[in-house]
Length: 464
Ligand code: 5AD
Ligand code: SF4
Image (cartoon, rainbow, N blue to C red; front, side, top):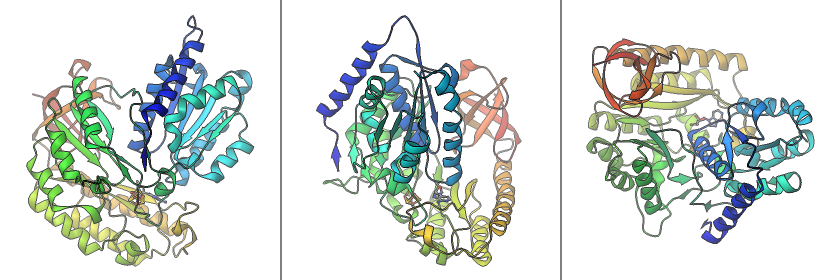
């Protein structure tokens, strides 16, 4: 593992300046960046956009106006990959009409050899391909594409951490802060350890400096990101736990809410549960993926816990933090899962009563151990189980939301509601989305909202 040196970063800054100086300043150059997948990818895109802005590009929201088009891709499931291929294919005509447009594809998908090979041979209108490990080299890669030819940079330089890349963040009040990269868990279905590499943590100092910086820019909430935040700092010479990091983040003035994603049940500590319970700024919300309820399937997934161990953690959390909001991830149809195994998952949903469940049908990922495991259920049966899971969980989610009816909740307003332009949208401490009539002057402020309507996925209310 290594930190990319300041000298290497300076070389990239020189490329940023070179591109900036190349631009014809009488014409606005525009960049379109589309992100697929998780919060980590969103955070990477914020850095790609930051670099592009430093090079003199303005962001735009359609490919027609763009001088550079970038797709930051996700490899976790096949449907995300198919969408990317469809969208790249659709740009063939645009490239023919406007050969000067630079088309780039980056992120997790590109870290897989068979995918970058396909782009090289079958999508010849793509100018740039680079993987997650090359993110910091983007200025150099773009410079080469602007001055020379197609660039493919998919080296697997494992373990690098880069600091000092400019960001173009979402507007306040919520800032994403990556605290670690990669994953060492090798769950047998998951491509992440192969495309994002081994686990490595940013230093406490760099994280706290970034949190202070966003606080000074008016951000009120931080979302700390990592594939497995509970193992933060495990490989430091002087060990720092995630709970200790959280306590440090709490000390930053101006930041009033702290959330984090994702926790692995095998690494969750009593110390962490205590920090969530004790620290006012740490939101009373925990996303704890279980993936499956059957011990046989959990073992085959290499999850390192049993259903009983998981439920013990949940009980401990509920006892210490009675108002906690819980969510989880579930995979339906993992190879070898029978209908009896699936029933174990349903039992867990009914017992835990999660506020929110993110469920996925298993998707075979080339190169992972599960890709060669035998299936038991047909696609039809898997879909039937998936639909049933949704039905069971929707009822539970609605019931959990119903408990908010009539309550007054402190909401941090994030912006205009996605579904109604006359409504503003924000979140409760527990992470529930609340929509209410209001105007944009409220963005970034805390307001008290009385909940007057509850739905499965969100709440509605009135400001008081
Ligand atoms: N198929 C389906 N779902 C997957 N996930 C990860 N890999 C796969 C896969 N191959 C899900 C897990 C994980 C979430 C981010 O995506 O539930 O927690
Ligand atoms: Fe994938 Fe498992 Fe790591 Fe999560 S913990 S990123 S599911 S390997």
